[in-house]
Length: 566
Ligand SMILES: [Mn+2]
Image 1 (cartoon, helix red, strand yellow):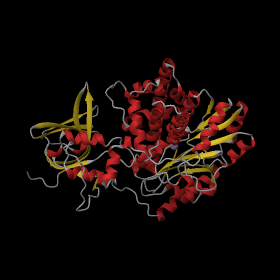
Image 2 (cartoon, rainbow, N blue to C red; image 1 turned 45 degrees about the vertical axis):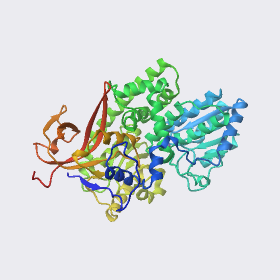
Image 3 (cartoon, protein in one colour; image 1 turned 135 degrees about the vertical axis):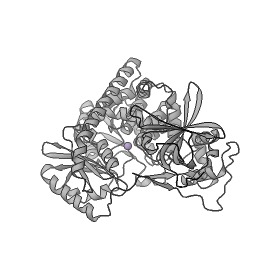
Image 4 (tube, rainbow, N blue to C red; image 1 turned 45 degrees about the horizontal axis):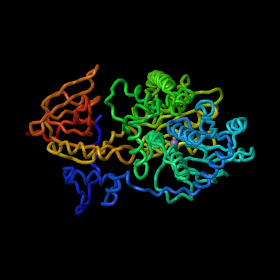
């Protein structure tokens, strides 16, 4: 299938700012387009973006002082503190951050993390009781808690105070907690940054260290960066700073757990750079694997251990569980394909994968959605209930589609592109039938071409080392700050070779002023068969191997040129 190439909007005519790019040696037209497409449209914004580490962002949470004083009181009076986090990377990183904070000030800390399949998300009375049994006097929630109104009333009733640190929305009534640290809480409307859960926990730690007048160790930023990257929040504003500083700290981390996890995640390639891509595709899936299979405990332990031997054991265990997770996923995928095939005329797909761990279903739904361009519901039957994980494309608002049935659900939550629900088995068939029917009447169209948004069309002559250096300055990449994508038209390769076990990748070399430029296209081998003029869409890769820098193009798409004359 042909992808649709879309050039992002270009700066308006007359747009000119002094980019002071002389040092960088970057053509003005390229830099201005890249900044423009990131909504950076004046000198000040660009300056702030480029020198993010020097910025101070507005981040005053209204309940921060309350929270700090309550924690300080607990520490002074030797109270036991409980921490309750979510089981994904964001929740675990934030929980580890709070554990390390309390331990660093010689406090007693007791973590509890729910299990996905048994407990689901969020604080329940069962956990409040467990904290009560331990003798906990203060609960700090991480990446959760904003909707736990009843549970927090229950904790109050049991004589336990709660500090909520969270980034989930709750437009309705607020819980009766001792303090709520949440950027979406209405009194915090001046806060512009889209914190992750671990980012919010980080702000609490940061303020606590300020209050104590002690310098905060580097690894707090590392942990906040892990969660901020994994939760895919916007990497603008203060998140850009957290991730930029956190990645630097991660690169030289002295936390044994993270060091060992990086070793196994690098898979023998010691030159792998620690950046957002490495964290998103290699580190986060591993940290998530134990939780997906049932119990995230090894991952939390890895983040809080200071013992080298334990760290090594845990990293290997997590890596092994990640292999198991992959194994389940490929079996689940094989099973899903014929089911998808049977429903090829439907606009929404529903796939039963009852024999798999609940944590596998979400990623499989995502894969089905990507493969078919249709919203997918993947579910499992659990005695008289059906538990489902769903993913959608950009055309269908899954959350509102499902919301019409909210009275039928036992549990329900999510957003436009991802959601989950639990429903009684006897209601399921009817519900799916109606949901699929509704889709027919909505504007839901399927099989749209994949869209690739391009930052700038450039010439081969523009491919100078300066361009690579410039794009490196735009890191860290992520949501709202994607890697710049370039287009070059009418390019004549001088060498093509198909590589990989199945010869599905392609290496294309061409010349720039007599110098060889290398490019690699993963899974693009079928897009080119002979030397002819092509248009390419790509990002820039800087590989460092044995201290030698190698600049390469990472091809995203290839098409035969329209104009084929030389
Ligand atoms: Mn989160």
